[in-house]
Amino acid sequence: MIRLGLIGDNIKQSQSPALHRLAGGLTGLPVSYELLIPAEQGRDFEALLSWAEAEGFQGLNITYPYKERVVTKLDVPEAAVRALGACNTVIFGEGTPRGHNTDYSGFRAAFAARFGDETPGRVAMAGAGGVGKAVAFGLADLGAAELGIFDTDVARAQALAAALSRYKPQMDVRVATSIADACEGTDGLVNSTPLGMGGIGGTAFATDLLAGRKWAFDAVYTPVDTPFLTDAAQAGIAVLTGYELFFHQGVDAFRLFTGAEVDPQALRVALQGQAAA
Figure 1 (tube, rainbow, N blue to C red):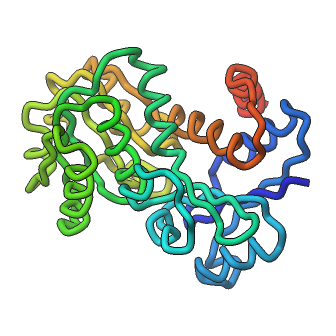
Figure 2: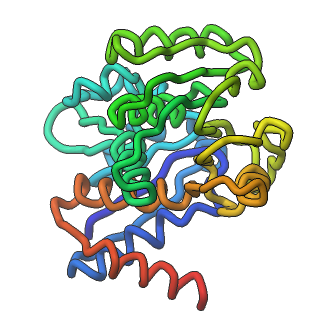
């Protein structure tokens, strides 16, 4: 049995268990997948990570709010992921666990699948936490010309801007003083905050900030139709849902966990069928 799991705080609606179990079935691999919530397990994050390794888990997904916290516990082989400073996928084995970021790779794949060869242009992003870092570095690799970052934690936004500027010096990166400031003159809008998530609600972008934008992405996928993306679609903006990030990062994570390639279209159909059942 390939034992996998997800550590996070607000994960009861996660579709990761279904994705990985179905991917296992499609590739002929026996896969289990458990939701591990520190408060419910009676362990803090570090203790839960160590427990999972000792219990024989092959790997874990890591989600909010632990993607940055986990990095110091890992060997991170990819230079871009070391630079962005957040991991969402942990592989156990001999020695120090390895860390990867399939939000980073998955966002690039999701953007290309939705928009083809188009570049992101000038982008405003709300949120500079774990997923925000991954998306920002993905935008840099996709050729974004400019990124305006707004986070209520100014130091966090500044740290991300500095890391991005070192990684991609030709990209114009700035820390915005407000979300409206971040949106000035932009083509794309990105929500990398928990706003819009089930149990949280809200939106990072007021409707008066939507006019004239070309595309919008929301990292939240539970629900898929967040208030932000609903407003964006009504404003005639092309949307990229958080479900697409979830799906593509999951395909990448399954490959890292198992070494197996799952047929993405077959997996998508299987997930849709299970959701409809």
